Length: 79
Image (cartoon, rainbow, N blue to C red):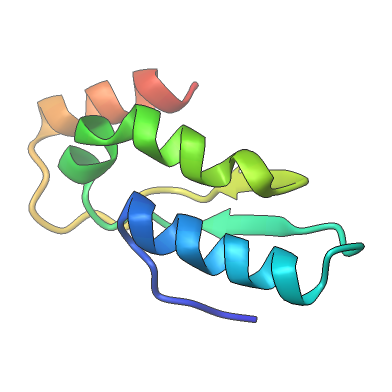
């Protein structure tokens, strides 16, 4: 399944629907952030949204409008 959820609420809702439909299935989430600022601002909410998955893999940032400082903070946060 593929979903374009990029906000913690959207991700949480998608994971919840998947788990309700396939309750016995292991769920791996691949997340490609497009804004370091959003990920940094909502980091705790993202962690809570991914709580229902077996494994969450955060792939490298797809940079768009980030400053070098935001990218540095992003890398420190997800390490």
